[in-house]
Image 1 (cartoon, rainbow, N blue to C red):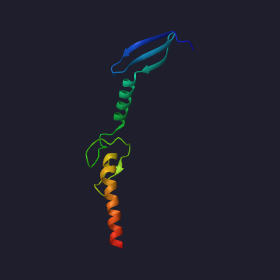
Image 2: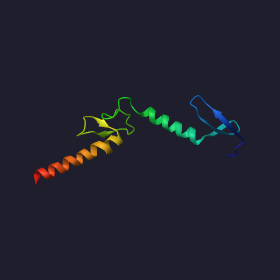
Image 3: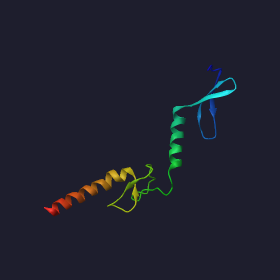
Image 4: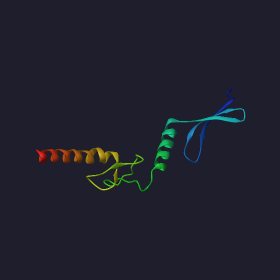
Length: 103
């Protein structure tokens, strides 16, 4: 494949910037700048998140496709930060309380 032309500086309605590579009349590839590629990935990730998937503790959008079980703090699904900061420590507290009560 011989690249005949590189047309730089395209801009489309989604805000992408980058280069198009052509070999004659065929478009060979589109290369985005890093910033545009990051923005495109973020937009795709945001589009795949259901508006119903919100953390039941902090009400932020859950980025993980399934969320985390929020028991024993709340009923429903929670985000990763609430799971790590609130739910898991509470589970450990319950485990230690149960061990102390059993002994």
